[in-house]
Length: 318
Image (cartoon, rainbow, N blue to C red; front, side, top):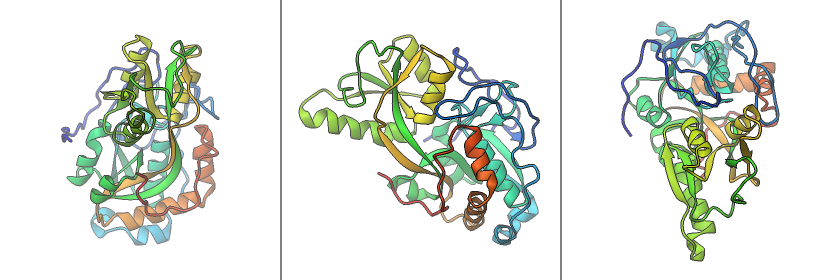
């Protein structure tokens, strides 16, 4: 993986022409205003929640006690996110406010620790190297735990997610989750879809039965993948089901999500391996889970059935 230069001033990135996300900025501070417009996919909400969900949340004394002195003195937590993946992690229509379930959870973690939050917008496949180098304190980016990631990261469970496949509306090639052999399927660079689920599905359904492998097309973001799907340069997209369902809801008669899911898993907040921050962040996540704010955060993005009860240290899911 490459380490991308840290961006400390707002930038504008190209959004999917189908308006699945707005523009990107880096170094966006935690405190933001409130308004609501965009629909959420899957099970949920119809508001663009730019309000700061952590307003009024008091620090958790047990979690604060676990903070390293240097972090207390600094007073700020730095979070790395790829703000191109609605409805978990994306940019509001004001082109400056990070929104979604993951920014909400990051804000709540900082609030439980009595710290301010800095959200940094970087490509997903550079997040791990950024954590390893100490450039960022943690990430809440729907990252699944794998054996390789756990060698270099501390990972704490915070909700459930899954992987699904999307095709053009009407499914003109009559594809299903298990009939993708020989087809061009886009995945996000650095994602578990690229590293784990597509290769596993290809072996299970295709190469082990003498059929041609699924042709993986690796792209920087789900927006790029869905754009190429519309232009018929690829046949399908494999990605988090929350994002694909959001896209299908946002753009009726454009995308169709296939059943069954490729995989369901618990996902994690990640920090540098053996980070002194890990115990405090773990305690903060558990405090959030035990509070009404967790159900509120899940509910307003349509994730009410994706909650967990314990902020456990993650185990490999590959």
